[in-house]
Image (cartoon, rainbow, N blue to C red; front, top):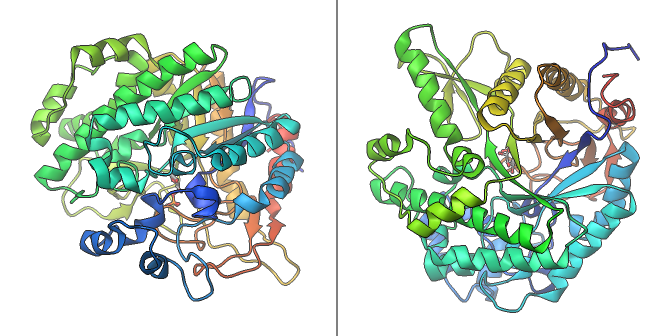
Length: 488
Ligand code: BG6
């Protein structure tokens, strides 16, 4: 292996990997779990069909028939059966040398209807087993309370996060977890990519009537946003009361949008894109709505129901660290007819200086260093990179190998830039590449779009042995961790 130049990763740097319950676990209705929006997301494109299929009673045979294929498999978004493989999978993470593992807890495994008073013990026990297994190998659990899913019963009851009542339900759910895992979980994240609730109103906002981009639905999305902000601050307070050693992070999807040209209008467009992207983090890391918020709301013709109590709770309970996902950069401003590329939340103008992934995501390691520097200046808090990676079509050879040099190259170039940011003085505390074991893609590509160091034998229809195989990137990442980022 070629010696790379020395970087400055701190000794306690948290190397690891990231996942989410609904893309990983499988066992959709096992041991008392309730339905979630993620379980039914295949109907998202057609709200009418979703309503017909999913309106209560949701556990009837009819609904099950609609969701289960003839082999009894849930064909979509139902994970890689981590629920039954977690011991073997964690053993592999430990073999790679993980210092941390990011998982999310499915709210509906703990409270099947979202607002039950008494928790489902089987659900709690499952997560306790997972956490204990991680701790056995000295792997710090990094737990997201809500990652792209919402208890469906609560969507039907109160249209998800549009309702202020959902704040109390979430606080109750989080309190149960904080009490149970006190002393075991040090790092928590309230919501995954919370700034994306504008685009994922159904999935993460639980908005049944999310009609996207219409006036009505945007209003509901912004209410959902505000209620999630207040909920995040409330659970930060709760966590600090219950377990003062534990830390709460806030997380956004970060997209660097460069000005299309040096034309002032394009530079302004880039600045405004940053403001919209950082809005929720500004509130949670700095403690109040930023100065630009009102004008943004006016332009979108939306309002939030900010109360005096909200102002106080937001001000007094800022997050302990800031976290973000980073996959690509984009372009702001420019001409209408400029080329466009896909993003994980929207279309962006193409950047002629960057290559693209198979899914059109523009690969930009330097953008990660830029983002890290911007966030360090803006928030002055420790920074955790909790998602990054390359989705690709991997091929398992007849010798059960996966030669994913493209993934190694992507991650190596990003880690180099983290090293540069550390030298810039940015306080980066950890790095958890997304989908460290292959799992279901969030944007609907099922299993074809893989991110892992570990290959899982399952196809887009949910068929396969579910056997795990180490890819070439497995031993590469193991060496990176072993040398604490000195050899890439
Ligand atoms: C992030 C999400 O936006 O991107 C993950 O937090 C998601 O849930 C990841 O899987 C990668 O996106 P995709 O669409 O390639 O799976």
